[in-house]
Image 1 (cartoon, rainbow, N blue to C red):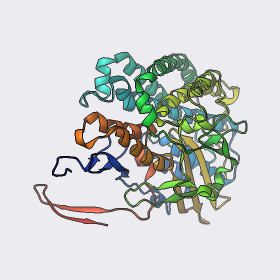
Image 2: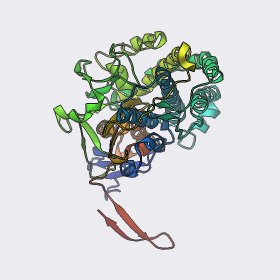
Image 3: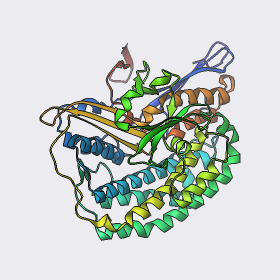
Image 4: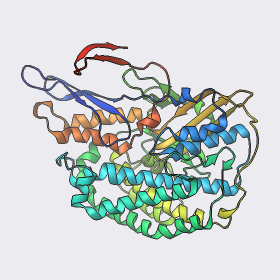
Length: 479
């Protein structure tokens, strides 16, 4: 929308491209064409918190896996862990190891999708490249080896999931108490045989990415580069953890704010704020209040808060990563860097887990009925901390469910990030497509998964449009 003098006053980016799900960005400009405010609106609603009501608790892992086609395993794992708590059982050691393998394969393939398919067109072709070519097909025309390597990496992760769980999308193999079947020697050998080539590809990509950082100094300075808290799971030793562990929060200087927080007690320190212009809620750290309690989750947060990764190659890369800045790495541009390091870690950890002598054990499930009325399952999804919380009645039927998704944790930071980026790059008096692409690109650094993240009922916007057969808008009603 423009004034009489031709200066754009409001810009809508609708839809935001190369993300999972549906969203738009609104930029509000002043008389001088400079950005005054910016908002990230999530325009889709899923509602799995209500879909779960009345269903048997043992259906939750398989049901929740259908939340998303990109990271179904993460919901499968968190749902099953909540089920473990309801059963009050000890999951067999081999089953825990198999769950970890499946989850690392999920993180690996999802990171490959984010880096190579969604963000590499910006990173290699340039933020100002022709949008008709700034996609994975255009990238293949210019850098075929890079695309082939990315496709191979994602395929490897997906094949591990398929061989373990029966299918790549919406598997139901992980169940309360363990997994539904043991792994075969053939699947174990497949995993181990594919790791060396995958490691070479990730290491080559890491080297190329690090060499390219000087090309993006402006983006690094402006892409959600501000102080915040960071939250994620760590082991008892403070190492990188995706399946289990305790929650830690650190600040912008790298100092620990809270440590060894029990994930099942998340309601003691996390609250959610409803947003009037989005289906996505904004969680925050309760002791600091809203919005001062803003924090970030995901690969950047995890690398900021751990003491070490716990595998040789990833620890070497982590040391180099931390030499970029004093304190925490604050720019969300570095999410790309952190994903590559986590891919390296995932491969090293997969090799360690798949080589363990008891990985082929056939005792992989603890059998029991519900022994508790409430259960919480927490894991680190590719995009960050994922919380599933269920309450059940005496028949084992779900009476209440609460889901806090990684993308929701990042909502406050994403909104602040688009404002910072838009103020740095967007000028309404001489608007260019590359300016707006950078505003989208800062969202892509977080790799949001919006299908995963919109489930709570509350104060939500609603717009109903009445259209004629020709598509003309006849009436609009908003709530």
